[in-house]
Length: 217
Image 1 (spheres, rainbow, N blue to C red):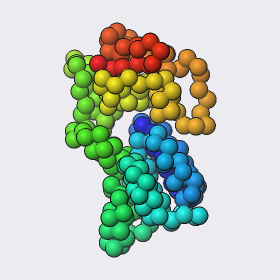
Image 2 (cartoon, one colour):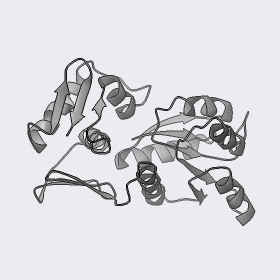
Image 3 (cartoon, rainbow, N blue to C red):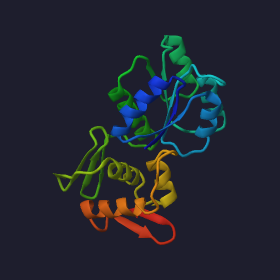
Image 4 (cartoon, rainbow, N blue to C red):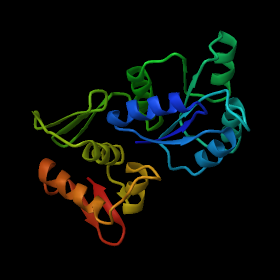
């Protein structure tokens, strides 16, 4: 899941990126509010992690401008500002959740997954389709009750598909959500991962829609 991180502290940003990537997130960062606001308007992110104390544009102003522009990106505020009044201001401005620094990576990951599920209208952390079960909290996959070992990239792709059952997803969309902008992307990578998921989860689990992309149904 592709997540936008608005954080001007390099050490904190690196800690979040290194900690959240193994949990299935692809992190892209903006180190100031102006760039973060523009990136969030692109509608390619599953969620945003927002610090309030940002240069060029304060985090609360970024959030207010997103909501005024009808940008519905789920937002997790992660900040050192932890008074009850500041929490109320953030939630009233349109934030979906609020964590104060110092923080623990597992909690940030769990809250991100929860708010993304809520944004998609999904309550349970365990997603099922046919005989496949994906526990988004533990990243455990079962097929007909038996564990299936997936790589991190395969897990990201399955997670993306299973949140969009019946919808055609283009190669470009998959690439955007599986990789950060600065990652090297081989031209046939998507086809390779689709082929691996079919081999591990069933040949008919993902349908190729010629000229458009893929569909899980």
